[in-house]
Image (cartoon, rainbow, N blue to C red; front, top):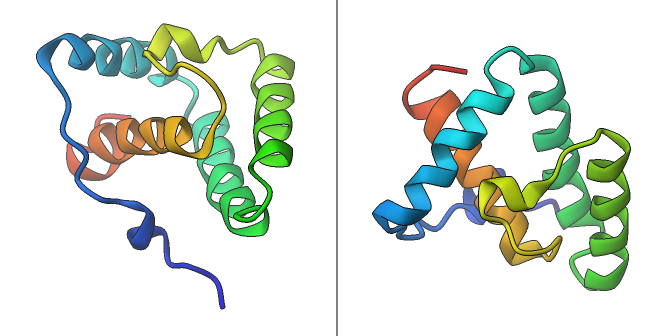
Length: 102
């Protein structure tokens, strides 16, 4: 049974310093909606597919972001682990779903 995306959301707290990275995320993706939606769908899908194989998940995500020329560290994301990719999803949820700005 697939996990619902809402089960991956846990209202993780962020500091003001971390919020600066949220702003960088918005600036980067403001004119790249299709790419952003593709990445978000891919992250959710691969989290489900490889929930028991984080190393494969990390390698796939690393290759995916590198291929697109996106440096996740610009968004305060340390690596391609599932926990860190949840930050990417949080940024999407904040800017797209909550504020509807990207």
